[in-house]
Length: 75
Image (cartoon, rainbow, N blue to C red; front, side, top):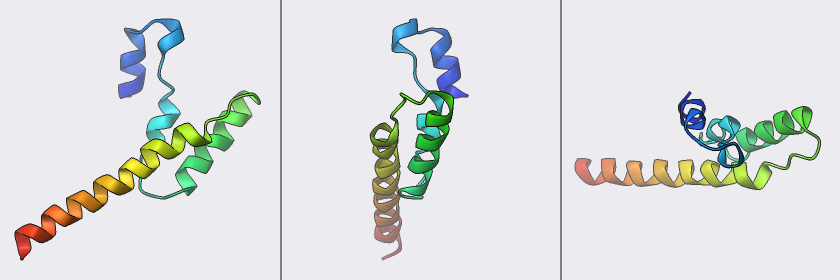
């Protein structure tokens, strides 16, 4: 929903693909592969795997940082 709202105010050539946000979960690399398959079904020339892996990996890094902060409060 956030990407669709941002796309209302952006130019056509700068629009954000909302499927990239779906790959931001920490299920590496499965969610990125799902986004790649969905993109290929819509447009066979669409290659999203590397673009989907970036938020995927950052989700893992964010989870690790949050776990480290939580552990620092508990110890």
